[in-house]
Every structure is written in C-alpha cells, then in structure tokens.
Image 1 (cartoon, rainbow, N blue to C red):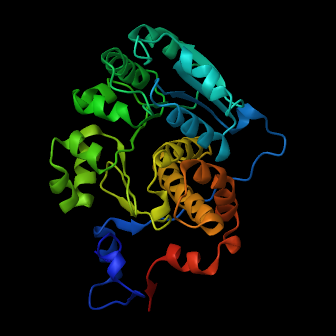
Image 2 (image 1 turned 90 degrees about the vertical axis):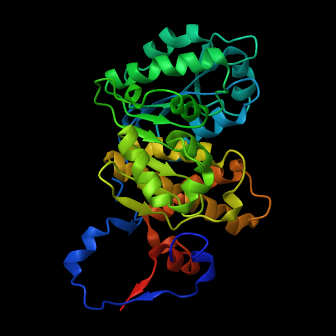
Image 3 (image 1 turned 120 degrees about the horizontal axis):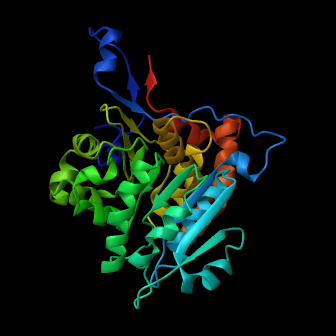
Length: 339
C-alpha cells in the first residue's frame, strides 16, 4: 500500500523497523522493491552478434512509431543486431529515421497489416535469434490475428524466449493459454497495461485495479509466463508468485509509445546474460531510469517516447555506475529506510 498508487502519492518519507516478527518470515511475503541485476562488462573484442540478436514482428499502416521504438529500444539498451519484420510498405518510412535496423519486408493485407501468408518468412527469420518480440503496433486485422495465433506456439516449440506485447496480447486473450507453451521450452514474457491484463483474465478493469498484485500472479499462473503489469510503479510477476515493484520512472512517461521502448529494453536485457526474470526486472528498471533522465533534461510535461528512447543509454550508464544517479532520484530508487 505504501509503494503502489494511490497510497504512494499520499506518503512522505517512509521508515520501517521490526516489531516481533522474525526476519525469517520476510520471504513469505514474496514482494520486493526492484533492484537491477549486475550486467557484465561489454566484451572489448565483441561484435554485433556478441551483444544479442532480436527479431521484432511489429507494425501496420496506422502504427509506424511502435515498431521503430521497440526495435530501436533494443539497440539503445545495448543490443547488437535488431531485425524488424513489418509490412513491406512501412520499410521506406521507418528506415528514414531508423536506418540502423535490418528490415524483413512482409506481405500485407489491403489495410496495411501483416498478412497470414507471412508466417513462413517470419519463422525462417528466427534462426540465430536470441529473442523474438511479437505485437507492437500490429493492429487487429483479421489476417494478422491469424498470423499471431499460428506463430506463438511455433516459437515456443523452437525454444525461443518470446516477448508478447501490444495487439498480440489482445489476440492472446482470445486463445487458449496453452498456445504459449505448446510443448516448447522458450521463456514467455507478457507486458500488459491494466486494460490488457483485464482482457487476459476476462475481468473488468475495476476488478484488476482492486488488487494488482494478485491479478498479476493469476495471469502468471494462467499463462505460465512472466507478467509485466505496466503503470506507475510497474510490477514484474514470476510464475512462482514473486513480485518486484519498480521504483523508477515518472508521470512524463505516460505517453504513446513509452511501452514500446520498454519492450526493447527488456529484450536487450534478455541478451545480456541474465535470467529471464532478472532481465525483465532490469529492463523495467532501466526504462524508468531513461524516463527520469529525460525528465531531468526536459521536464515531465511534453516528454515523448522518442525522448525516453534517446535517454536509454544514460539509464544504462546509471545502472553500471550508480554514483552518477542524482541524489533525489537515488532516494526514490532505494525505497524505505530500515532502522
């Protein structure tokens, strides 16, 4: 209650101390304030393949920003090689501002969304990938929904880590949860906002908001996945019930495309030698730090997802060297003082 909104906004300095409960009972709570993992130093002799390869299945005619923000977020967070599989007509537009991406043009529907005929090419493009992202800006075109329903189980069978985001979450909410596993071993990470989480659980938004922690745990169990409940103080929930509450970020991040940058950050951390849960926690933490760095330069009013994206490298510097973090943010990040 002190770490989640609205309670957090109503508090001041928070100091905790022990009463009669022994420290051994702390683990029963299974809830903690997020801490970023220690990320290994970059290999001085490394090349683009050394720092991870990601495939993003994203974009449609009405959503040019989402595929760019997600796939560039991966590079800005230290990833080495970012491939964007998107409708063919998007390539000239997105490449004009994101020329460092490698593009995989896909057949599209009359409405400019990825056609179901693209399934084979998408799956062929997963070779040598460390992570596959499905969803940013896909749209809910009927053909595209069929494509998502077909590739999710096949990606699992390939044993690839898969991040499911955006419109792919809406498609998933209409399917049997078993499509995510399908006998495969690949890790699954779902990144819903509260509305998407409500659809995944077939609940009302009001019901989900009433207990975000238990809602996240229910989704993690139902989908056998790590769940990222996006919002102020984002939650990361593991299948075993562990919950991490993220302390980074600010209200300026409540802007279109912010979640797409987050997807890229998580994907990069999955390529950094961390466990899937550590990678997700650290990616969320980094994303919030990038938002805080952007707010320091610009103020929270008028921040855009591009501002967050361009501040991700500074967030990485803060993770690697916490002495660079401004004092007022450090106090926010470490959480309650224990006496």
